[in-house]
Amino acid sequence: MVLEQDITKTKFQICSRCIYDERVASISFDENGVCNYCRQIDELKVMYGTGQAMGEEKLRQIIDRIKKEGIGKPYDCIVGVSGGTDSSYMLYLTIKWGLRPLAVHYDNTWNSAIATENIRKVLGKLKVDLYTHVVDNKEADDIFRSFFYAGVAEIEAATDLALAETMYRAAAKYNIKYVFEGHSFVTEGISPVGRNYFDGKYISSIHKMFGKRPMKTYPLMTFWRFLYSTLLLRIRKIRPYWYIDYNKEDARAFLEKEFGWQYYGGHHLENRMTAFFHSYYMPKKFNTDFRNNTLSAMVRNGILSRAEAWAAYNTEPLLEPELLAYFKKRLALSDEEFDKIMAMPPKSWTEFPTYKKRFELLRPLFAVLAKANLVPMSFYLKYCFPVKTSS
Image (cartoon, rainbow, N blue to C red; front, top):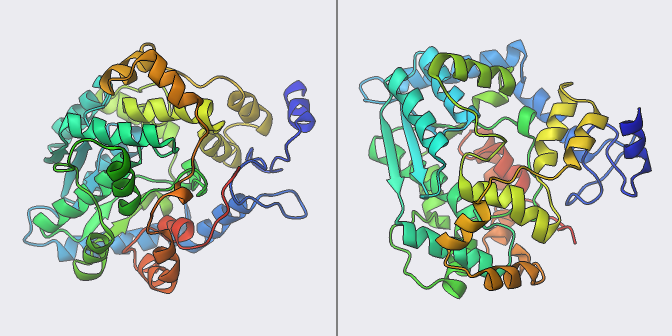
């Protein structure tokens, strides 16, 4: 009861159903105090039949089509792997469903030892082949350093885009038409576009302004490469967790028992750059804590009460010992330079060149592509509509 009073006494308006508050970008509340993001989750559940017979049947039809179209090929689908819970369990499910996956990994050279070992254990036991693109470590660090100097939030966005491009390239090489992604809007939500945007033009423009090394080994997804993969190669993005009843805690317990898989301490902490982003950079420089995505999802799913989630949200994020020292050493930053950049006023992605307006102009096209699974529905919902950013 005391924790619930903590919620009611806060100066911010908080969703009556989850713990998103008025600081979240583009948020609004209905007459019952429910935020637009909770309503979005409800609409997606209806659209995809998530956890219902309709959703299971939709996914079964997709899997049957993949099997049929994959006859005679060495692989019939791709699964992106990171060593985390969702992607590891997704790989297991594809084998369970009778598919022949190729695991794909983009190595930004900041992987934790636990994540690397998790990938080895799961792939080894399932006997799944691995396609890996390893970027030059100095080049990767130069891109990360560019974003740090730019003062924008998306310091590790280059990794997310590179994984997507790496999966497209592997699909093109092996003539695979289906890419499986381990995202669940039920367990993770859909992160609002505020300080959370990236595309190929954004990454190249930041690097051009602040980088020192040529971009040679980094797999940049340009606008035209994106359209080539979706329109010409017609590579479909499938997110099975959008259709089925998926429980992350059960998945983690299964992985630990069956594969000797090891938990890395928190959501998105399997990569050290991502851990820096979530545990230190965003909370300290932008007063933004993305744990509210997962915690809000846990409230919606009845795993935590709003009071418990709000209490957890107001604790300090888990920070790996020596992570700051590692970050400074990798990016060749002195303590003084690091502190100076952290103290500078934050900048927004809206201040740099991006493809955002182009995505908005092509919204009707991307609506069709999203319905055909040629782009993720979350891409359409986040990137193809005008947004206001939080201050």
